[in-house]
Image (cartoon, rainbow over all chains, first blue to last red; front, side, top):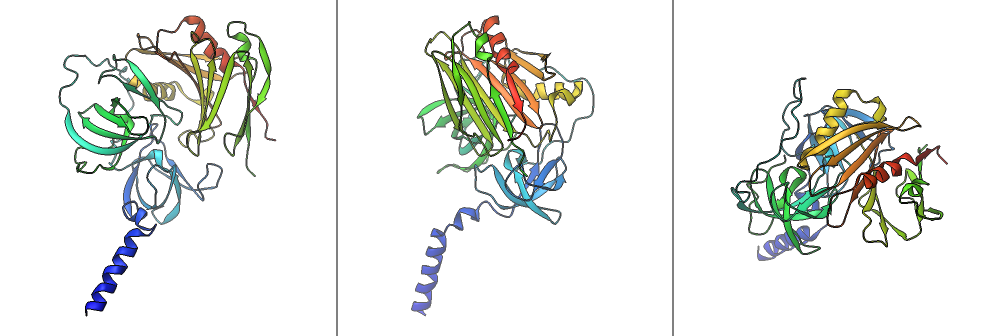
Length: 205
Length: 176
């Protein structure tokens, strides 16, 4: 009996070290299509924009990710029995809001300064940068306001850590470059909690 | 058969402060789908990287620290399929602007049509933290030029015009 138990423990330890464990938290998850123009997303035969389109997945539709390494450009997925690959920048863990009805569009509004540090709570989670366009740039600022100075630019899929956040801004840490700053929350995609954090305040914008 | 876009950035530098120019410099293939060639002015250097599988980034820097930095980014967009910027309706252009502008404090945009028919959107941040984008969509590819000083000091009209001139001299060549 003791030998069987030891063997079982050994098997569990070996499985925890296998490459498959890297997928354990990234497979079989439900994501939603979230495109900025509310259009359908192409599912392709392989991980390339040159590969054939298998089907088009409507905005807001649910997909099941089968194989996705966090920060990767592509992920394999299942949509209504169709299997293929989609670009991860058009996926959201949260169901997106419905497509707005046609009508006058409000101009981007200026956020009043006031107490720009109000409402921040400790969150501690890892994120990747997600600009609003494929060629977009997201700015890191000295303080949480659009009127504050920019000192660094980030591109798609760059990893950061969020330490504190309010509804609009995050205080972030760039471990690779050892810099702190503030970035707008809507351009950061939650990946996983940091050690000691539960990520409960995280959500895709 | 893979379709390859060859994008040549030539002569645009001729419009930047009348600098003297070196020979065209062929870059390494930034992706599996297109090549890049750029003519650099004397005193300029170029850095090219692939940020990820689909995003190519080129920094153009000048020895003169007073000059702003120019960055060219190219990436395919699944949202726009094989579309061109000129194909977008007024509503779609406005929606695209709304997508680009949220991080800006006081944004504005204008549309410009080049002599070869390429339509561009020029988006400008009109505050002390000054930067500008010039964007076009070509067969689903976002081609974006971005200009800013290292300290994001205000840009001059000439500097923004130079950014537009950069795009004015982007040549889309047939596959090779």
